[in-house]
Length: 581
Image (tube, rainbow, N blue to C red; front, side, top):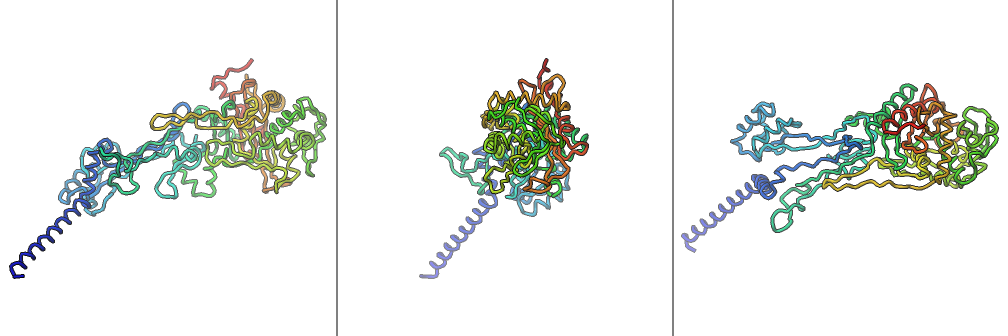
């Protein structure tokens, strides 16, 4: 090969290499440096309705029955900047334009943009005016990202019902904790349509050039419309707070339920907490329990309100009638353990009405140990819903504790103790549901809080009342109701509601100081409660009042019954229920 040919060949090779390097440089610039711009422009052309920057849709709203908001997402605007989208020679000009908007010196902004990294935060929480000014610039180098802040307009009034939103352990994803926020977390979350689900051109569906996990369209979460009546909730909280303070209680709760459907109209806990500041409690072992909802998350020994269940079992099984009598000796033994009346007295000959009116422990122990026996008694205990979850749509519901004959931890003494609500653990939602069955002609309804779920497309999922069982017949329910009316009229005048006939029963449960114990293991502190319903004969409301460790008086008749009376006197007229004859 002569020298001339060699030179020409070398020149050709040089030109090929030079062309290849130039092409590589251009491809690098187009794909890496300018690629984001072209991708954004292409997406904007194909999907002008989507915009260039895509934000997650809001979490679903939670409302009370009248439409007032209990929880919602409010938008937070973050102004971002990226030097990739602005030529170096234009940085100073852009910085001058941004300076009066972001209230920062132009030199500082320019230095930030020259650092060469994407995703610089210029304003973490921008005002609507700042957002409008940024968008008016029309620069691809500066944009607004929208995120969401969870807001609870009713604050501590509905905290234990609603729960709160926080960042989950798995990263920066928001998740619901406690109450409705946790129970309906999946429904409330916005749903995401990823790039593979978006139509890119007329040929069909194919992935768009986004990083894995990014999304283009985010659909809002479902809205929840609840059974909660905010006016009832306010009244319940006011009377609960008044009662806790007046009677020197440590805490308390109230549940108001519609016995016909199981709808919860109010659920209040005092003291409560501000859901916007949940972190102040979550990190403190002394206050962490404040976040729990004691109506469903904890159980307690109910005391004498459980005599409603015991008497219901005896009446419904045909073992006794209201006129059946027994001789009260003041103390009765069952399973080798003595059981005494609350005041230590003997009441002589009493019928079944007297057992409830005077709240005689000996009377219900006589029923379980000498009349109906364990098989019948515990069959009704289970039928009334104890020892199993009610299915209420609130997070973290526990089952309570019921000991059955044959269990490894069974003691014969339980049969007598359980008759008056000792040695058995229930949740407030179980207790109010069981009493609601008496008010509802024997039908045990599933309690619930969400009336309907509304999807982003407008589809509505309505709740249908659920009958969990029929522990007693309608006739037994009516008989027991009349007996409980006499309890209020003759035994607990503090619970009476002027102008209305109401039924109910008190409870004074000594708080155990030892676990797995049924004798000589209780202290002086009590849980005072009252569960009542009315107006009779057509009950519209069931109300449970519980006061923990009251100091002015330990008795439910002198504390919780008073709170019940005050609240019912407010609620009946509020709900359009006229007084009786």
